Image 1 (cartoon, rainbow, N blue to C red):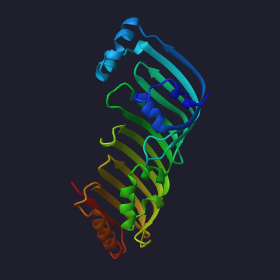
Image 2 (cartoon, rainbow, N blue to C red):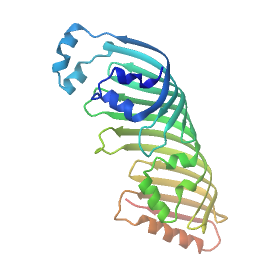
Image 3 (cartoon, rainbow, N blue to C red):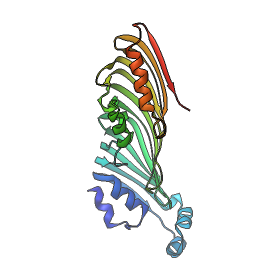
Image 4 (cartoon, rainbow, N blue to C red):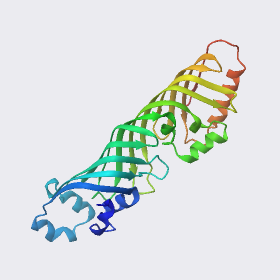
Length: 272
């Protein structure tokens, strides 16, 4: 059964309809169990309740469902990597909906585990996602907004060209209200990194990187070979602060490195 069948049963004004309509573009229901048990006193008053009152009065025992899915296509943000799940499970308990990705691909990386959940009766619905993925380092870069990636590329730092293997943990919150910001906590360990920047004047080879991104700050530490020299790096920058020309600072540091003496080198860029 196509998952889009929900359109026949849900109000277009409901938060659950909005979530499903904007996020899910494909998928088949292979089997399901749904137990809906709404008492008369709830049905008699539900239409007169405010959104907040409805959320508070809708108890867990009113709705219990388990829906198994195949070939789910799920996009939780216009610019973040989409999810292709060959197997997934939707669990609904009261007003809480949880999507468990059992076998999924995110931008070329495999999910070791991933859960997505939301309170579909909340007046301010937000999607919460937590998981662990393993795959190409470029997948991690795709969690950064395209505008910021382009800004880096215009400074001759093309992060999407990075090669290496990343193991990442992801914890993000995405409000459906467009005016509210997304919240991030993405951490990654990347091994075997190779990347050429500044028109390949600076080349990282067999580099190991630990990185963390919280939506504002990008914190990176690493070690390996840069231009065939053993090197270590620390970078802590606020990528949303347009008053700080940190790309210029990075380029200046890297150029100084290029023309430095040929010996093991360590450099830092720390911004508060």
